[in-house]
Length: 173
Image (cartoon, rainbow, N blue to C red):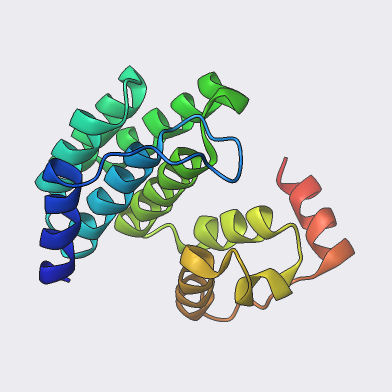
């Protein structure tokens, strides 16, 4: 991880900054997307402060997300989760898919720190829309990991499908 991070960081800071046209329409520049990936690499090696600094300095200008990351670094995961949620609600479709996914992953991370495994299972199910085959496709990362962890920690709960799940969700409300 460390060598790859150093190479990517060096390329971003001193290398080719030629913005190639994106194949899809993105609200982020290709360089911003690289900064997001670099920040996530730092997070995956437990360098939370560097993750926060890289992301806040080079990508986001959203105040709610800035607050959420600071709360997360301080260990106040419940408030961080709520701040990410508010940011998602406020931004709506204005946020880029890459950044949206980062915020979602941070929310899932907060839930793991709070031990909310039942909610992680629900979040995973909602994100997949009961299409379990997506766990092995494009949405595999991070949902497969969270799916396995949440249902292994949930104990005797079983996985409900289709109509069972809709009835359960209606009863919860």
